[in-house]
Length: 331
Ligand code: G3H
Ligand code: 13P
Ligand code: ZN
Image (cartoon, rainbow, N blue to C red; front, side):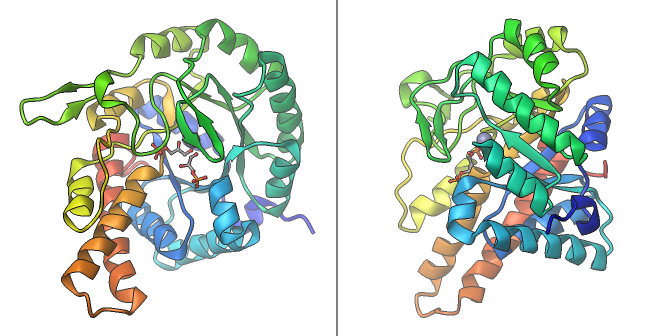
């Protein structure tokens, strides 16, 4: 039996994005795979009074089961309202790869779906995206498409190098698909290793500094589709603080580099109105679990290490909403 996202308390991204564009901020889209991540997102966005998009990836569906995640998200909205948080919450399928998957998510209560046809030839990407949009809009569900390819691991697809979005294509793509938002490739990529050390310079402390995002391409895109909602994937900053905690407590992350927070802040002042963050949350959780277990090797109660990890993730989310996305107080 199909259920509408409206009955579950979610919203689609329409109003969120128009507020974000007009208010020069971006809505955070955080991935979750388990209860602790979801609680941290709800509490972090509730306490900072930020709109939020909860994201379910294909890896998350394999790990935790799609039905389980959808019911967890429904429970999360109820928890938020019980706690007195009235911020808008959307539930998004992240990197949907087929029409049938998008339909199944829409029928089970997702309020936004991403159909990622970015690896397909241009005309096939248009045809698939348009088909998903046609179905989704009948249910008032919004759709994100993608043009250009991000380097790194994107669910099961590994792309060796980025193919930047071609500004000449965006107007035609948006017109022919009727999509609601567009993910673009301007130098971000998925995961904790976004740049090779040889692509970076070093600052005075020896920290790797990546090449800047291609703001020229972003500007060109904005000129062609003014006011249209743009999405940035692969927007974790890979904060050295958490990489260091991991490495100081038995981990071995080498040359992990992310997108500097100032660059993301700059991007949110444009028509970028959704910023996807997953890896930063993973790093925080791993850092805190490693730290607790190293300090208390006798500990065997998962609540004693997942609890501190959840607390630190909440703090990270508040920090991102306040200082990077600019979404705090914008619910
Ligand atoms: O698209 C990238 C996300 O970080 C999801 O990754 O499929 O390993 O959960 P995942
Ligand atoms: P990060 O790996 O940079 O967190 O990107 C996540 C993402 O784009 C999910 O779709
Ligand atoms: Zn992504």
